[in-house]
Image (cartoon, rainbow, N blue to C red):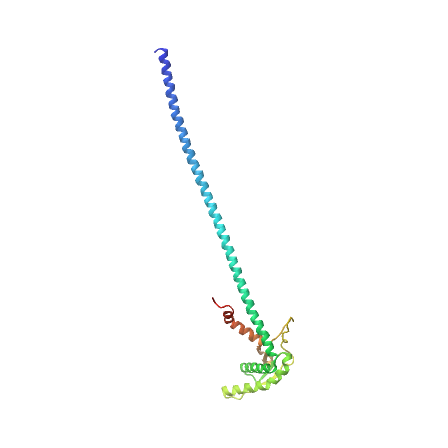
Length: 232
């Protein structure tokens, strides 16, 4: 083998080694690119998942905040509605009180009404002696009611049972009910009516207008509410 042939063989070997290295280099580059692509895809997927979860959390927070705000607004509206309705009912009660106070200022009407209240109380007590307590300003009217009330009581008992039963009535001159209400004046007041007591004060019946009005307003509240706020 001459030098030229040796040189050619060496060149061939070098070319072979270079070609093989190029193949290996290409394989390394290709593998690196594949691994890079996989890693990039993995990172993108992870970031997308993070963004999705963050968005879902934010959306849930917004929905929760909206639900809370809506609930608060609804409750506030409901409370305002209830308050407005109660204020309307209170105004009705106050208007009734004014009307009743005016009626009780009329002597004849007050006398008839007080007599009926006394008779009603006597029929509940069925006692032989009863003390009648009223407002101090109604004392004179009450004095004129006693005889009529006692007679009506005896007549009702006679009609319903056939028994003769009388009741001795007297005015409580030591303790009085609160005075009539005065516009703009604070303090305890009473629209009128009477309190009956017997057995040394151990038994009593509150037949005042205030108590009866409170009872009627409570019992009639659904009907009054229906008239003031009819269902649509």
